[in-house]
Amino acid sequence: MDEKQLFRDCLNGDRRAQKSLYDRYAGKMFAVCMRYAKDKTTAEDYLQEGFIRVFRKLNTFREEGSFEGWIRTIMVNTSLEMLRKNDLLADSDDYMRHISLAQPDPGIIEQLHEKELIALIQQMPTGFRTVFNLYAIEGYNHKEIGEKLQISEGTSKSQYARAKIWLQNKLISTNEKR
Amino acid sequence: MKKDNTERTFESILSRKLAEAEIAPPDDLWSRIEHKRKNTRRLIFLRVAATLVLFLGSAYLIHLMISESPIETASNNDTVIEVKSTSLKEQILEISESQPNDDNGSENMIAMAVAYEIQPETEFKKIDLTTTNISSDITHTDNQSGNYGDPEIDEEEEQAVENKTINTKIVLLPDNFEDELPKEKKSVQKWSVGLAYGSNIDRGPAAQNGPQRLTNSSFGFDEFQGELAFETVYFQQIENTSFEPPFSIGALVNLPITNRFRLEAGLFYTLLAHESRTMVINNKQSVFNTRLHYLGIPVGIQWIIINGRVIRFYVSQSLVIEKGLSAEYSADRYEKGRFQKTEQSREEIRGVQLSCNSSIGMEFSLPQNFALFGQAGVQVYLMNKTQPFNLRSEHMIWPAVQTGIRWRIAN
Image (cartoon, rainbow over all chains, first blue to last red; front, side, top):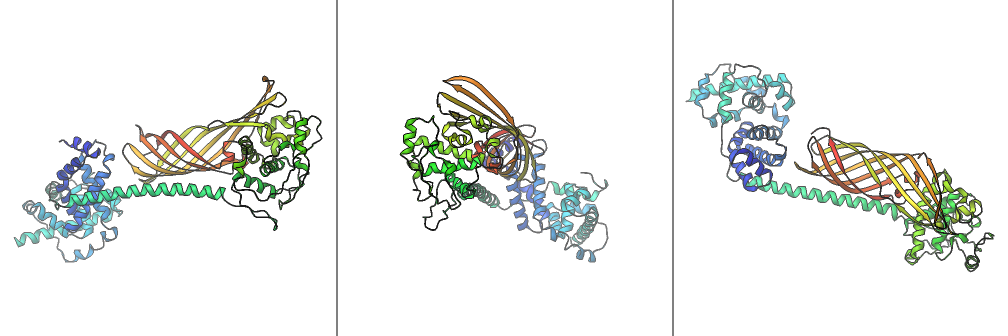
C-alpha cells in the first residue's frame, strides 16, 4: 500500500490502516524520540503521545509534502513539548568543566553503530542534546531553534558548540576504550 | 532551513547515520496507544455531554429566573398569592408601581388586562378604569357599573354591564385560572401583554405603538369618546396578531485565536414583521402591519468541541447589539368587507436591542476558508421593553436557528 492510500485509509478511521502506519514508521520515529529523551522509557512516552497526535491531526496533513516528514515533525515537536522547559538548560554547565577541546577523527563516527551514537547522544545534558538534535540532525538553524525553544539565538549557538565538544570528547574516549 | 555553516563534516556524517536510524519500540506500545486514544474519545464525548447539560441547564435556569419569581399582594389581611403567569405577574407589578391618579394611557391598558384576568367573565369595555383606584397596595375594591354614558352602546351590552360587578381587588387567584378562561379570551389576554410591554415606556402609547400612532383616538368602532375609549376599547378590538418569522441576512467573519477557540463578529440585517387584525364591529375592520428594520452586530466566541477536517462541532456564546433603522406602520381600513384606504407612516426606532445567543453548531468546510454552518440555540433578549412591540417583546427567551456561510480569516 502506498503512502497516500495509507494516509487516506487512516483518515477514514480504518484501524488496520492505522496499525500499518504505526508498523511502518514506529521504528524510525522511536529512534527520533530516543535522541530527544534521556532514556528509553521517556522515549516510549514521547512515541506514544506522538502517534496519538499523528492520528488526531491526520486531517491537517495536506498531501503536499512527505508524509514521513510530517510524522517526524510531529514527533520532534511532541518531544520538545514534553521536555520540561525549565530543565532544558539547567544541567548543561557542569559538564563543560571537565572536557578538553580535542578534535575527533570523523572516521570514528562512521565506525559507530546508530544505536551506539544514539546512546551517546542520550547521555548529553538535556540542553545540549536538544539543540544538537535540532541543529545537526533535523537541520534547523539557530534562529529557528531559538524560536522553538524560546531561547536566544546566541544561547542556541553556545549550546550547540558545547554539545559538539562534549560529543567529540565522548567519541574520543569511546575510541580509546576500543 | 539554512545551515549556519556549510562545511560541517561532523554534522553531515551524524545526520546521515541518524536520520535513517531505526529502533524497534516495545511490542505493547501499539496497544497502549489504542487504549489512550479510546480514553481520549470518551473524554470528548463527556465534554460534549457536559456542554449540552450546561447549556440546557443554563437556559432552563434563566427561564426559571425570569418566569417563576413570585409576587405578593401588599395587604396584610389578604392572602399572598404566588402567581404562575408571567404575563399577569408583570402586569400586576406595573400596576403596583403606577401612580393611582396618573392618567397615562399605558398604565390603564395594563390595568384593564389585570381586571380581565381577575374577572374573566367581565366584558372589557364595560370597565371604567379612570374611576378604578388601583393603589399601590392593590387591594382597593371598587364596585361599579360599566356605563360610560355612551348612547351608542348596544342595549344588550348595557344589560350585561348592569348584571356584572367589577372587582379589581387582587386576591385569591386560583392556580388554574388560566385554564378556566375561554380560549378566545386567552388569546386576547396574551395580546394585551405584548402591547403592555410595548407601551410601557416614557414615550407613551401614542409614540410607541404603530396602530395607536396611526389611529389616535379614532381607533374605536364608533369613534368612542376620546382617549378613554381609545384606552379601554383597544385590546378587545384585536382579533388576532400574526407574526412573520424573523428574517436575518448578513456576513460573519471568524478569527481563530487558538486551536480550539475562535472569535466571531459580523454585521446583519433583521426584519421583524407582524400583522394585527381587529374584529369587525359596526361593519368596520382594520388591519395593522408593522415592519421593523434592524441592523445588528454579533460579537462572540466559539469553542470547537470536535475539530474534524471536514466537519466541526462547536458551541458559541455571543452578544448581539441591534439598532433599529426604522419602523414602518400601515393600517388598511375596511368597511363592510371592502377596502377603504391605507394609512402609512415611518418612525425612527430609538434605543438598542441587546441579546445573548448561546448555540451549538456544526460546520462543513468549503474551499477558500469558507464553511457552511448550521447552529441552534437560545437567544435571550435584554432591554426589549425599550423597543417597539415585536415578536421579541413578549418572549424574552426565544429559540434561535441560524444557517449560512462563514469565512475564516486564517487557518
